Image (cartoon, rainbow, N blue to C red; front, side, top):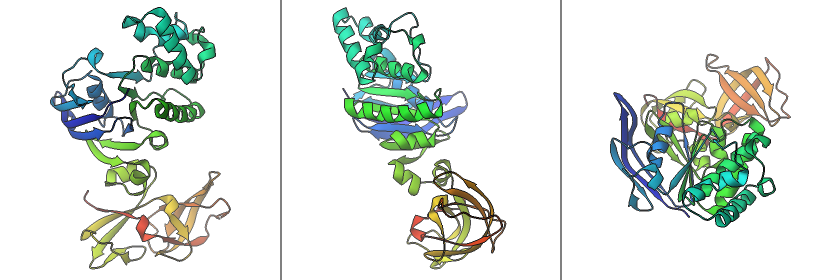
Amino acid sequence: MTAPISLSGISHEFGDFRALDDINLDIEAGEYIVLLGPSGCGKTTLLSVLGGFIKPSRGTVLIGGRDMTGVAPAKRPTTTMFQDYALFPHMSLRDNVGFGPRMAGVAKAARDAKADDLLDLVGLKEAAKKRPYALSGGQRQRVALARSLAVDPDVLLLDEPLGALDLSLRRAMQDELKQIQRKIGTTFVHVTHDQEEAMAIADRIVVMNSGRIEDCGAPDRVYRQPGSLFAAGFMGEMNRIPGTRKGAVIETAIGPLPAPDGTPAGALTLCLRPEQIGTGKGGWDMGQARIMDAAFFGTHFRCQLAPVAAPELVLIAHLPPNARPEQGSTVCLSADPADLSIFEATR
């Protein structure tokens, strides 16, 4: 089962603190949406509004076209999966997964069959008789997912579900979550502060800050062409280069470049990812730079560079793994102007 979601004018205050500020968001049925942002940005509050744990101060929540704004959590077509697995230690995995159907009055044979199907979906059917203590963290997380799906929700809400796992398990579960979501087609809304996790699993990323949506779109678009200066800085490492538009040219301390159509006049901030800076001539000639430091990351060297024309402006570049950059040496830098994201400096 699956359903679309429509949030209109959602605002919420805790006393004098505004946690959500006029949120408008439409989610298609079967989409995997990730709410991404720093602590305190409002993403968990928004998830709680969706789940019915918080009634917003203003606005409406539609799920499957029905107004759910004031409906209690138990009566919504949603279920929530938390970072804490909260499995019943005295129950087998089969009984844990079948607990929701049991509370709904489903007969034992039917709920056991459903639990076995869901445990099979998450790769744990053979462990159906085991108890949670016999499982690894990643396996317990799969059981929690199967239990959440056992009540046939139209929308599954995931509140930092992978936060307690180590890096390798987290990456494995990212792949599994996306594969399972594609198989069942349920709408997933997933909260995280991990940019890499968001890009790995989302159909669309919703970047939040101070209770507002800063940007919303496909992961590659949000990363390569961010919609705001905040989103540009939050979605991975970013070089910020001051500039000023004068006529048809943007002047910077490391060289001029043509101003794209629509570039505002006055002070600007030019944003450029480290992997978008190359060596040699071409495109935007950024001049020479001295290599201050270089660290090898397997796929690239992460280099700190001081432009000769503006040594106070430290740039980060990812150079190829065969580049073998030497500290103190100089390189010529360049970039494709099309890779730049340009914002007013006051934003």
